[in-house]
Length: 365
Ligand code: 13P
Ligand code: 13P
Ligand code: MG
Ligand code: MG
Image (cartoon, rainbow, N blue to C red; front, top):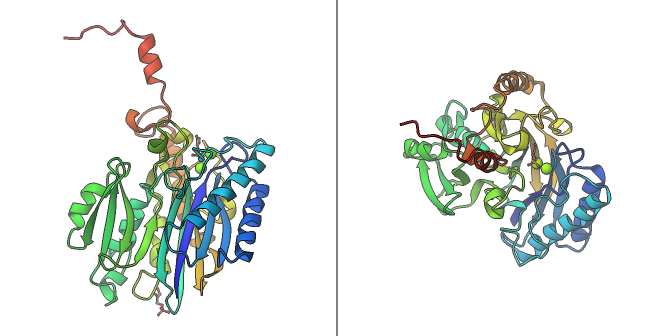
């Protein structure tokens, strides 16, 4: 059975500030998707949130880039925006850049990721949802899962994984992508994906033109809008087991809270902290950046789950380390590398301050 798993996400208003989604907004989203399920537009759905980002997880048989599904997600966000406006939540409709829907949600603000595949005899998937960071945060993670044998022994000992994977890497500025085959082209690939704000892993496949094994949201809101509209808090889907990495191999990279871009005002570097659903409420300095892992077994498109994978004491040390690193980074205050370089900041007063000081810069030659 060929099914499509679509995750569409948007920040339609924060409760309080940028720290969480309001329960009534989540209920509103669930009401809309329940109606669509009754009308047989969807097989199943789940509404989840990470920080102030609302995630609609949907399954259907209509394929990727389907107008009806995109419109459903769009209209759901509009309904949620009404609720958010009523509650005067913070930054209402932050990620909705237009009033009108035009056939596809691409370019309208929300992030989305879709995968159409033949549902296997057993189809475990893990959906990562993050807040206070951007899609480049997944590069390190996806590299560890699919290309690092120290993380994923399956690359060495599972005959079905031993040939490696194809990575499609997007240049987010040029809107072009390039395919790398690992392990053969690992070093070439790392030149690009190490530059996380410019190149993002769009998806991973076992055959060059085969089904996706992993896929991520790669929209860059700030580029879309040409102005600050919030970091494009990302989602990553990874299918697990039976020729793909095991669930534990997929979760393993998060033992290390690597530094990502985002955090306060989308303008700082901080550690990505793996947390249970109920702790996905960034508070300290609007962070540190958070990620949750929702596991599902698909059963003819039905979403059996979610399992809250980071609700596990085995990730306590990662969280402790993240807190230590957060403290260390915070101590830099307004200095790089905690604060992002000028061209990557979401906020800047540089033009105004430069203008004020015009004429005061003297030749140093
Ligand atoms: P199974 O043999 O049950 O698939 O488990 C192997 C595995 O992937 C554990 O990591
Ligand atoms: P969000 O991108 O999650 O809305 O956060 C924006 C921000 O400014 C946090 O300080
Ligand atoms: Mg927000
Ligand atoms: Mg957010």
